[in-house]
Length: 325
Image (cartoon, rainbow, N blue to C red; front, top):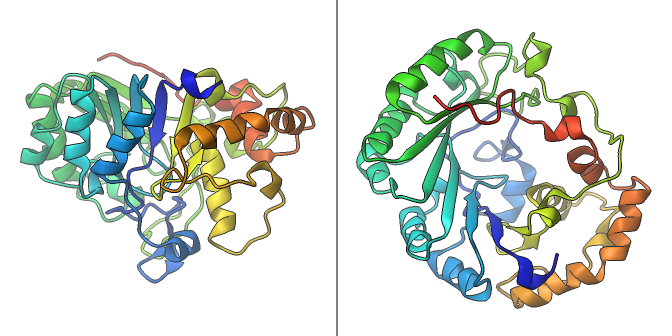
């Protein structure tokens, strides 16, 4: 991949979030129930001005996915303004949210042609809040209904756990009734409990077909094929740092903001913040290290790449990747 090839972005608009999901990298035991990483990094947002800057430097952009590692994009202070700006540039936007932020009237304004929203709802009125701690199920449904009624393309994404796998069919039927275009069951791998407010132990589902292979296997069994490189895609973290993917960002942030030893600092030994350098120069620095990355991949040295892009089973993240309702 070269700088001129970049057409797709994964963007973390913010590391703010309204929820406290027990297995999220944002959740922890530091003040505010956040992790050491978030506590030490502070709060960051990509502004409308930042997004305009990104689009000006990457004129071939076709698609932007708003998700990230640490926040919910709908909590971003300029979320709506950013969506409308990107829409005016004919850039297709996909958004991942727990659905609880904002009010129905707000979500009506997000319902634009060329915008798709994945509402991550892990259960019904009795189960969703057990993992999506701090969210209101009925508010989520009201927001989704408003978005759909205004013409929005909505997906219901469901992560199965032991406590909610029994309501999958119920939620699928409700999704169809409400007008969701898709119902996607995302294979589960989150099992830890990092939130003291959790009322139950978060466990993998009993049905093995609902478990992500990566939950029990961190190794790759084939040559690594870099997903983002193949898709001409890069990742922007909420503080402006550019990484090949969200998984790299998660690793390097966890080391940078927790004073933990980073054995792979040589993979990223240059300034990677677009607020300090041009995007082109940052991407070119990554390209210059291609031979190093390939050697690390061949030797299976970096577990992040091994796990995420070194096994087809681990790439297969959905039970039904696109189920049209």
